[in-house]
Amino acid sequence: IKNNGTKEQVNTESVYLIPHSSKPVNEYFNPKLLVGLYPTLFCYGRGAPEDQSRPVKVNLREHIRYLLSYNDRRFETNHSFIFVVFNLLQRRDACFHAQLIATKPYFRASADEIQSLKSKDIEMALDNISKKTYSSESNSALNKLLHHIKTIGGRVMGSAYSRTALRTRIHALIYNQGLPSIFLTINPADIHSPVALYFAVV
Image (cartoon, rainbow, N blue to C red; front, side):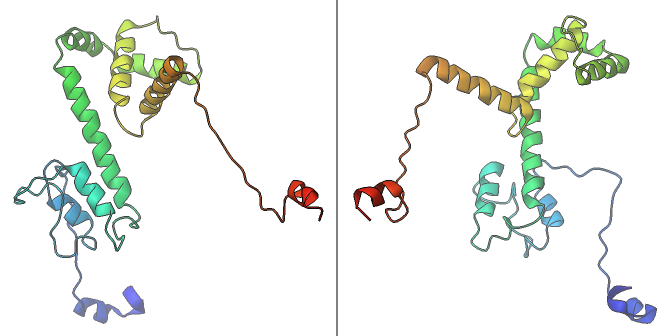
């Protein structure tokens, strides 16, 4: 019972219930998604990303960047908004690059070979990877699946494969341009520097 009230008081109050559905909500071009998730952020039910009624189309990534730059910082300081929209962007990047790979002519042969995999093969491979006893020559179909996952994951921001891709790019730059040089100048305060105090005969 809210606020230590009696059952009679609860019955007289109007309670706002949010219904749930057994079907997942479409997150593509659905301006009601974030408005329904965060009614306190979109107070008037307007300004949601990917609103088709908007005369000028705004990219989802740019719109989220604009929302996070609000002066009142209500989107930035919300406990879950940043994580939800980041997850949306991650899934869209993964689906986009997976679609690009699936349209390639060489993917059809790989898809037929990947479909021959069984759940036991994947479970055994995961067990061997955790024990660091996995051999890349054991199953060619599994190697192709891992290769496609790495290719897609390398373009998804924040993933482990994207960090590996950035590390490879840094190594390539070092090989091409040489090691980076960092110039650092430290100027200690004169009253705390024993060298300056020594030369000042203090």
